Amino acid sequence: YLGDASTNDIVELYSIPVAGPAAARVKLNKPLVPGGNVEKARITADSNWVIYRADQDTDGVFEIYRVPIDGPATSGEKLSDTLVPGGSVEDFEVSPDGNWVAYVADLEVDEELRLYSVPVAGSAMNTRNLNHSLAANEDVHVPLEISPDSRFVAYRADDINIFSFSQRLNLYSAPIDGVGNPVKINGPSVNNGEVRVFDFAPDSRHIVYIADQDTDEVNELYVTFHKPAAAGSWEDFR
Image (cartoon, rainbow, N blue to C red; front, side, top):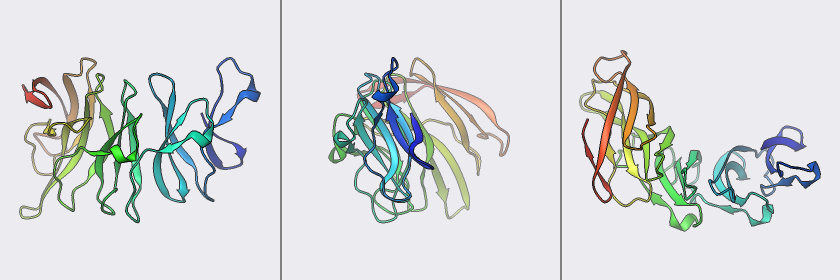
């Protein structure tokens, strides 16, 4: 859990056995810099690890860390890769099988948000870039969704045409291990059309989304069906 149990207004990460006692509480994050806080935490499916986002090392610079659920904090390690000056991790999700972390960060260029993944059992050196090619003024948006089978990450990204003054926010799916190319999920949309909400179905082969795809500012509900066409790719049966 997250709380300011040790210092007022300093949010940190703790774990405690469900059966107690309270004295068994363990602080999981390493010492925070002045002004630092833990903002999000997720437990892996095997209950062995906690993945958390915090500005632990530099105030205002959020990164992702891994720590055993029973501690000690000294066993924690940074999972996100080295950020450029001004960079920060915007958000992350852990795959349902507990093997992968997907996150959005301006890792390589300040103010250019891109999508990455890293194995929970790996290190920052194992980071993979997942998104399709984006221009300098185009970003990946949060939140992310990982398929129930843990194979794919769905994400939204800008599609800006500086010549026609048109802008769209499209939905894509990428293999979480980086093996294979991302594919666009939504159909052709009008200028300024945006995919607003999306989610995988439990079978991992359908994605439902809400978008003003056909008429600007008229939100409608869509579903796509995908069937694996080959390893690392998808065949679209919209």
